[in-house]
Amino acid sequence: MGVLGKAWTWLATGSHWSGTDGVWHRLGQHLFLTFVCLVISCALALPIAVLLGHIGKGGAIAINISNAGRAVPTFAVLVLLLLSPLGTHGQWPTIIALVLFAVPPVLTNAYVGVSEADREVVEAARGMGMTGGQLIRRVELPLAFPLVMTGVRTAAVQVVATATLAALPGGGGLGRIITAGFRITDTPQVVAGAVLVAALALLVEGVFVVLGLVLDPMRRRTGRPSAAARRPPADQAPKSPALTT
Image (cartoon, rainbow, N blue to C red; front, side, top):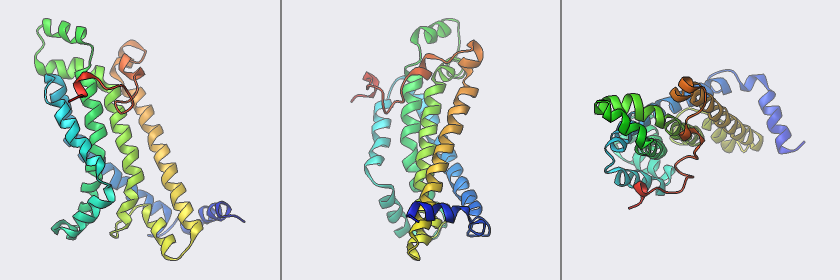
């Protein structure tokens, strides 16, 4: 039996799913860590991105600064944080490292979505006497919603895949299954842990795709996706003048 067959046998063994070291418990830890990091990332990035996109100034600088964090590996950031005074504060080094990793896609997509909302619609709403806050809530955010959700979805998948690093300083999550397999030289367990992480990432991707379709305010109003929903993510789309320095 090959490694994949043994990994399937490991996954099919009921005892590996129960207890404090079982898959269900580690999955719950992984999802909780992902949720916390994603909420913090959105709380930090979305207000800044929406505001800068609304006023049309400073977005390129903010995006370039946030993207600079991508040049530093998350593992390196985690190690530095563990060596700092924060290293004694439980999961916070891992959370901070993952938040820094998740902020760029959220910030970039939200800024592009708001700043490039249909200007004719925005100007018409402004001509009707809408205030800045009303423009954001009732016009720009609904138009930008697909790109905003794309950024959040990208960040969620990245955090799910990278949260395995939490196991290195002794944290929880599915990464503990992989590190335990390395420790006892159990290759099928390592492969099984990697399969679980990959499957979870795909599941999270699918959930956010469905949420993006269901919650899209423009789709609910018109019965069809907005123009932004048919555009590629900001990371894949051609750079607009607003993103160049």
